[in-house]
Length: 121
Length: 113
Image (cartoon, each protein chain N blue to C red):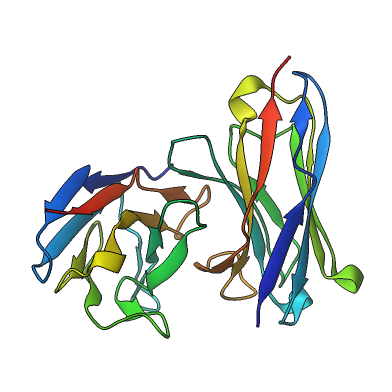
């Protein structure tokens, strides 16, 4: 059974940093692209970053590029999102998700339960 | 960037009746070399993460009831729930994975009339 367990969400002040982790199990982690999607309170889904499995390329939404870094540690079956220079508008539930293939150009077939990041003074 | 729009914003349908949600992309999400449409539909119930229903515009995910179907090509897509059940109350999102940045539609809320 595929499981994705996010952690690291917290209350942080504007300008602060946070690192989210996503522990994966139930599949061959290194063989699949992984992504982060966020959802502000009461709002829709926003794609923010993806890391491919076939070439480890990474891509970002304009809203987070230069501030957020996605990475993966295949030996630990873990996906990360390093978030710097946080802003109030980054407040959201952050979902870790598995893509259907190794390529980044795949749909999402599994989602974690999400972790809440609140940016406020 | 590809912008996804959905209509309607919300709809209320009687139990057992058909629900139809439209999704449009600002440019084609169809790749001619493989004849695939890079379009997925997700269902999100309150307090839960999204769940994939349809991918490649019309392929139903394993375990998804066959009352859910997807159609369309190019820039225009439709999700149909042929006979609405109480457990289908949710927000439905389309997503394109043809071009980075990937993008979701704003969502359509489905309720029981």
